[in-house]
Image 1 (cartoon, one colour):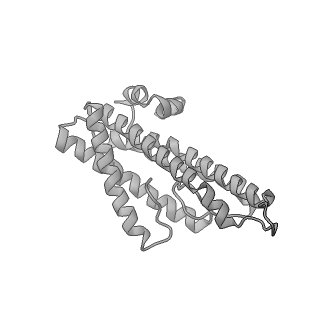
Image 2 (cartoon, rainbow, N blue to C red):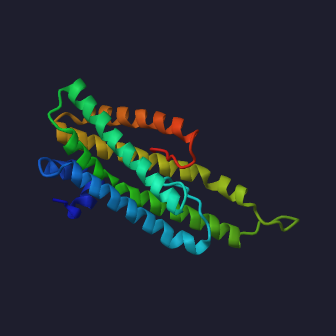
Image 3 (tube, rainbow, N blue to C red):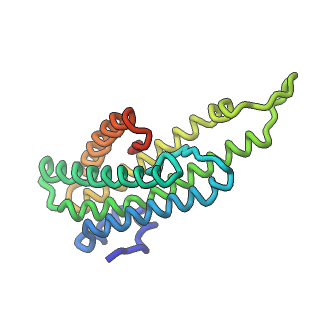
Length: 220
């Protein structure tokens, strides 16, 4: 049974949330939660960005293009990555640390970890609005009176964008580490190692596939 009231707890107190979910969640719950969070993320992003007439995603949240093909392919790839993340983490916990959990339970908990995805979409919207606002209203004070180019404005906030992506990535690793720790009844340190291993392998796969298809997303 899905526990929507736990979503804020998953974000800020994942240990408490996953200890409560242990024994009460399974793979199908995670799958449902994944697609719900993806839908909500696209809804948040498209509702604002379409009004601007732009289609650039600054903070990856599962898709790289706001179109039917981009959403379908991006969501499909993200779902495969979720299965791989849960599979690798579950394998590591069982084989390396004698964990007692199951793949189904880990998948269920990892589905709940997707609650961070709408935050990624919201961050992307905020950065797009910042860029749009600067391009629309910012005039560089110079002898020529020239307006700052979009590239210059983007470059000025790139460090902030990368910083937000890094924070959200670490946040995701931490949440999933708590999920693995609770599911397999292992220490947080071991849960972090399993989560990092999963993250590293998926990052390598994502990097390789990105060179092949523009629709493949980053796992960070």
